[in-house]
Image (cartoon, rainbow, N blue to C red):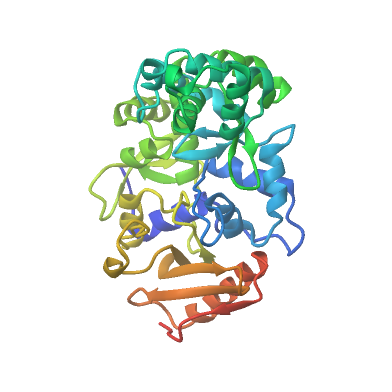
Length: 399
């Protein structure tokens, strides 16, 4: 079995995530570059926290530098769509061709309770059907618009039906999870706009979307998802390959066996890792890499925390839900990758009223090189400019 050092595995992972490519010249980032990121990563997580920027914008900045966020929005919101939403990791952006690969997940949603969404059928008979009819006939609609439409079109008393905004939202989310409705993008206030899948899918994919399938068996679809994960991760354990698209370990294990037999991946041993790892056959094994990038807490480089600790020796946790007095590194902390490792944790806040990108807390990792301070200043300045902030406020500490 081939053996890799921990440093080799780290460099492979960073390169596979597209962080080593030279950033385009300022002002030159276009749809092709943005599409290249989603093609490489396969999935970009969405989160509503906006203390810096919506999280799905940040992985593109980490890899490309400043770009037009409205261009990314158009890829998601306007036809022909090059990005669509689904519960692919958590809520996430994927390419339209990836959506049908989750057909098994969609079918399972029809018979399994998910976060209480399915229960809305039993609690409010007829509501799910009415919501589906409104979205199919009139979408794209936000949940608030669906509720208003139902109040007009189906004037039953709330006492009779027992529904409210929460029930309508739950019905919509179950329909979205099960693939019976799709996301046609977001409003300026980040509300999802629901529509029939036929209105969202590009013409070439409408048949696959309508069937919630693309003629592959469920096993073949899962194998394709693990193939995408293996390519995006470079080298990864079974647990990390499963986590990428939130598959079960059993699903990932079967797909790994297929991919090993095909020669797409090979078993390797990474020094210091307890579990067997799998190396993507086309992965670059750089002798060295040099990266200067802030990465979102929801970036696929770091979202599987056990992998982050194995690769970088950093135990990284998001402390948003930790009471303020108990936080160690801050509220919304972005790891700063310098060279080929994480050298700092940067708590960030975009103070839009004051026009300042604030760094409430900056924590340098042990052994961070002194030159990382200047690199971080450059990255913060670029981030501030991209966010249309005029200043950066940083604590006066260096490695």
